[in-house]
Structure formats: structure tokens, C-alpha cells
Length: 89
Image 1 (cartoon, rainbow, N blue to C red):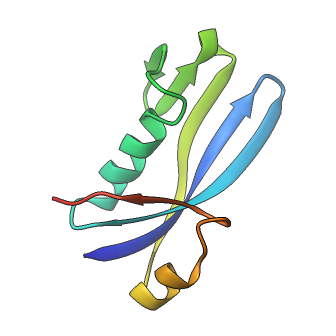
Image 2 (tube, rainbow, N blue to C red):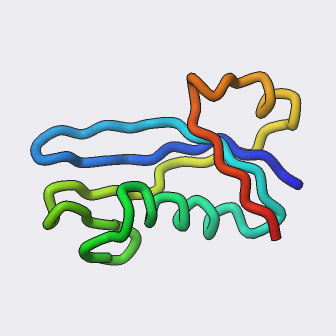
């Protein structure tokens, strides 16, 4: 199992926001990151490359950066600071 910190980039109308997440996986971390982003607001209305659109295109979501971290670092971040996703093979 490998541990990751990552970001999710959102454009909501004219505003931009980034949130941090963490996930653990034995799979390809980029695929897991994109899977999380794809379902961020439910089922996307439209997919354009790696951008997922929701609410009639008013919200656009993309996978941001990701970095592998140790298990100790991963577990030291409380859920109140980062969303947590566990994806197992």
C-alpha cells in the first residue's frame, strides 16, 4: 500500500478553489486520483479530457498535484483537514 496527498482543482462559475485530499492505494495513483475527481460532485454532465463538468457546466473539476508520503505522514493528517479515500486493488 502506498500513501498520497493530492489536490482537487475546482472552477465554480468565476471562482476557483483547491482542496486537499489523501488516499491510499496499490493501484496507479494517477488513475485513482482521476477516479476520485470524476465522482467529486456525483455523475459528471460532461467529460473533456481530464476535466469533469457538473451542474450544466457551472462547475469544472480537475485532478491537481499528487505526492507520495509515508504512512506516518498520511495518518498524522486528521480527516478534518483532508478528505480521505482508500482504494484497494
